[in-house]
Image 1 (tube, rainbow, N blue to C red):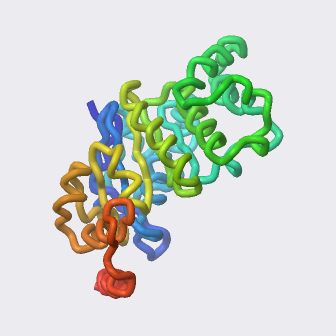
Image 2: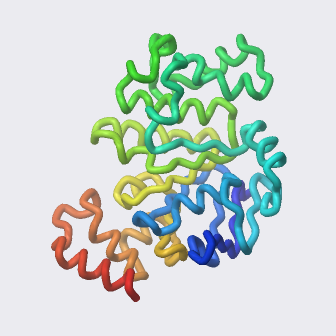
Image 3: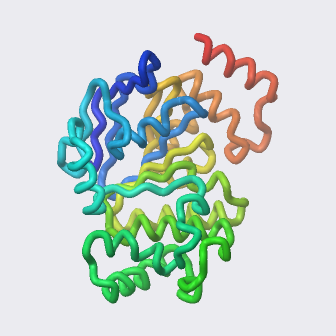
Length: 269
């Protein structure tokens, strides 16, 4: 069963076309990577799925509900149910600096009307899944490392037991050790049945954990396929550029000047 269905979606900001004819499905328990450079439409796609941007054409179905024409009140009710959650790139900015980690984690449950004691039990259940110790709960976000903060952000998204989690560049601000740890955690989440959309500019970070990869360029979905297919036999020139530019996929990346020349050609075509 598909948790998310995006069908022929267009999004315009005034005269600027941010997305054009985008089709994407995400099944329960599936990890889908959405790859593209800055300005490719990745964040606009996420905002549209979250109801923060309205499509000018097309259809969006989330957990079986057609949410295309939902109004603000309907979106608030959907978010309050915790069906879809979002993990930001910078957890220090997304976590309230004055709330303890415990309070940050139980907040979305309290909003749903879960009693505090039950909410704390739920938090204790999810901490091991993101490899955090309970002794961090009284601390403030500023007292944690970047990797710990990002794992708190992932745990906060999970405690409502959502159907879908969107992750916007979740490892780009982390060092290599914390990046690997967070990627392993996301991979392990597949067993919980939650669907993940991993948004990134770095194909190397996504390829190792994603079931499928969707490549966005200038608002259009130019290629989709399994991670192995996209990395091994990229069909679109832009995808080939991304593959050649991913240092974690190739020990000897293509010459930088050649990559920049190819990028300019693609973006101007």
